[in-house]
Length: 395
Image 1 (cartoon, rainbow, N blue to C red):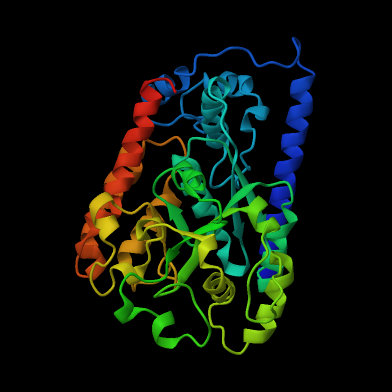
Image 2 (tube, rainbow, N blue to C red; image 1 turned 60 degrees about the vertical axis):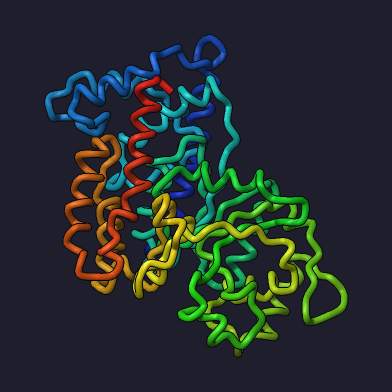
């Protein structure tokens, strides 16, 4: 029962966001002068944030009488394509953050990025934390697509509903972005004419690989692929006819999934990931493979570091699969999750996120992952520095 209540609350929240956004657009159209927002100094919010100890909004009642007037002037329409997060996670600070980015968007129009996630049962908190990490670092406008049903076939049907979406980044709920979504989104431009999706390998080291040791079905490449972070050109996927091992005829995405599930239902272990491995085994030319630092999991350090790209440049996207955010098996992963979950929008990222996190990570050095904890914050440090550089330039 609790599971259904949470799903209902999530759906209700999404519906409320849509209603607020629609109302705000209507109100904006009714403003004098054609509904155009008044010109504002884009650097002003930053100066106010620094003067106020790093907190931009959400501090009413704490000796900042200018806050109500400032918030009143920020039209809710500045929220634009961002979804409203729960008030206890985001509150007024989210509106400040969106307004700040809207100033940047007005002068440099950017393509909207679409981020999809399936949130079910006990995954609500993880989903909110993932969305927060995406908002903190990303530059271009984000639009979230949240699917509340967790059944395998419904998940795929949900993606097919997005008939007007050209491209989409799908992530599991246990994903944390440590650099802007913009950067993985840029891989779309690197696709060749046959590639329709991008994923990372399931393993870098075959000796500890799962698919090459245990799989009872076809899989991509040497060690398979992991579907926790999947970038998709939806236009190409809808047009693609896939080779398969069920018929000599090629089948489209919507035609192939359920037959594959029926054929391999007794052999698959990891659900949709196994089906994707089967599909790209027969259509390897359709997959773009990105390096392991874009989908970094406990397997990359639990037995010793085996993601060389992360050692060089840091971790870009953290994937805390197998529940490591919520137990003590991998405290390095849990420390990062807890740090982002506790961080409040508007707080100084160095003093309230990076520094406390590094202190916690130093306590995990008794584990293999903890011994290389600096790999976990290398890119995070750069992302935070980039944010302040952009703000100092008034971007």
